[in-house]
Image 1 (tube, helix red, strand yellow):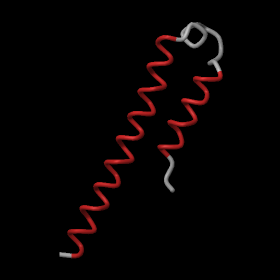
Image 2 (tube, rainbow, N blue to C red):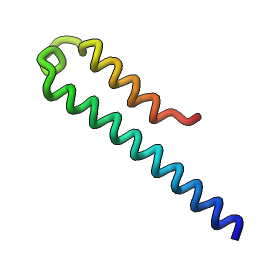
Image 3 (cartoon, rainbow, N blue to C red):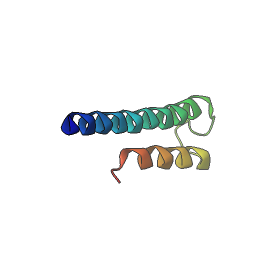
Length: 62
């Protein structure tokens, strides 16, 4: 039973990390679509860089 409970907790943690990662990426993508600076051929704006770094922080393992 302990192994099953631990496995369930690990799956819940993995799902929570995945959901956070999805939210962060969606925030970045939503910004990208509406920002005139990001949607052009030039570099990303500072807000997009911050959103990207927030997304990348959710994809690294602790």
